Image (cartoon, rainbow, N blue to C red):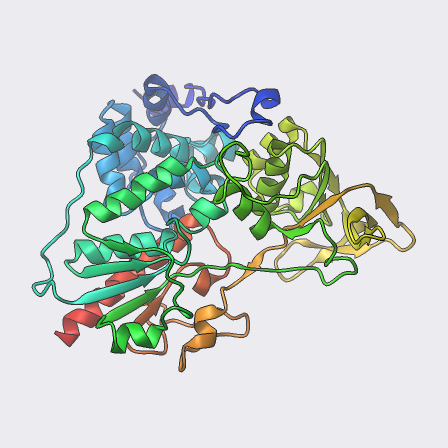
Length: 473
């Protein structure tokens, strides 16, 4: 097939649940490609010699290579190529912002002058992972001669999963410590079931255990144990810290302590990890708001708004002080939220939260905004319009303004260098911290970032651990 012929193949749309149905259930919204759709979409790849799509991938997946296999219908072969550099293809195929990463650089999208017409790399990645994962075999390696060297991995999110897997492949004895009762980090407590089914995350955790990684849950390092204890008393030769960005940010406005105000972290954790939506099964206390306002414009705010619908809200507002064009959330998630009935209130923001005499939320006083000059991030700065106050009638407010790094380990680990934002400082080439033998990666280093960026951090740290322990003998 010539490149001109490939350009005539229409992009394959993703089958989805009907919006009116899915807005009230927790099943996955996107139903995934069929085998024929995956082959057809993969055949659109122009197989560029320079592989521009790879420059947008933080873990440098051989994208043209796996697409060529998928186009042939060799889905197991495609997955094997992805697995050379990425441990979580079923996850990344669902939640990574491909339109800002690999698909942004796709030649097909550039020729058609529309990134939405780029080859749907993420959707194909998702399909081959779902289709072929049952057939894959994971093995460890004896590349490192003394398998007695031990590595502790703190946390079980994307960075930690990747680091643990690479360390196991390198022949180290790996133990993962997780503070919660379930592993997966933000993949299980943050991202909703309707975007990322938890059975997929569990499959990856099961894969780690098949590789020989030992997992200890309900161990809060920084409380139950400290980093120094792992090195000095528990006999570990190296430690990886991947505890993420779990400290929610608030606005500091009047009324944030009222009953009915939640951080998006708590709101989503109760619903996702603790399954508050399943009242017949889970005994999780939950605030059943009927009129919900979500403050923020990122992916977490969209997740919270869509979750509110599924928890029984009659009306959900998403309040954001910039315009739709400035929202950092994925276009696809915004589209899904609108289809499901979330009302977007752009160029508005909460000034204070209003409560009744019993301390419960009854509304928010908002201000209207206009856009001024671009700020340091390049987005136009919002400017409040004087005298534009109005009241929004709500009984629940979810604050989704982002997260700071988890402060527990920095606060309990003497000699660990952090920056002014509370992120752990690491060597950019090895991800070693200021303490020899202690490495870190993911959101605890980057601040809140994407799954695949965290994975890249975990991979780099694993290589740093290998070099460090090999030199130590």
